[in-house]
Image (cartoon, rainbow, N blue to C red; front, side, top):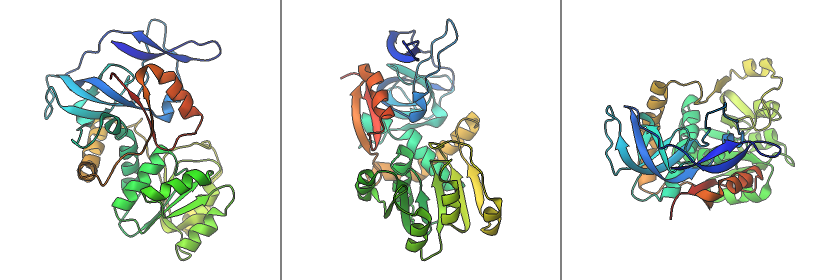
Length: 322
């Protein structure tokens, strides 16, 4: 099969399409014929493989099941499936069936490939924030993929007000259509003051932070008493001082979320919880991923360069085959 692999470039690692051995499913795996692949920012960090090894890029894909492992339950050859995984920039990929989802009939392959990472990340963040209907939610870097997914989910799950920050007025304006109630330019406006203004001086009940360094003091100031602060991404960096007195006085909870330190059993439980909560919304069209641009599989390098340029608003997808 063909796959997109990391190789040495003139100045830094680059991507190339190469013929590699077909993957073989383990007892818990589904083997997919890949139809579409979702891009994620973490894939821009290209690690060269050890000598003699192959590093195939990719974290999520959608495709048809062409083989099932001996211990797989609930899936069959021919099923349309979307899933997080590894080595997904390829014509075939193995994914653990415990974290896979059957694709609703109304979703295209490109839409299906856009769902697993973003919606599971955003939903897990809201669960860990102990979010309840009627609460306000502040999302930093709201124009990111996870930020857009968090807008959609917070609205569907009953947020009283969804507030988002970004440095781009143009992108913020476009997000009103997917449910953003209050848009704040984090460069030209006083974020904390505006959050307090639109929440009746209370502050945000839940903060979903995709920025990290550079926004921490602002987020603490914008937080309500008993707010829950969830750190998802660190686009601005990961190191910054924190005023623990503010945390204590507001009786806040600070929570971190990631897939990287979860066992497969924990990931499976997360996937089941997310599927139970969201699959109905996906099936009836109330939840629909926002896609910015679709590239052919052969243009994976150009697709990553486009992501690196930060021009996009929504998911970037690779289409495999015709």
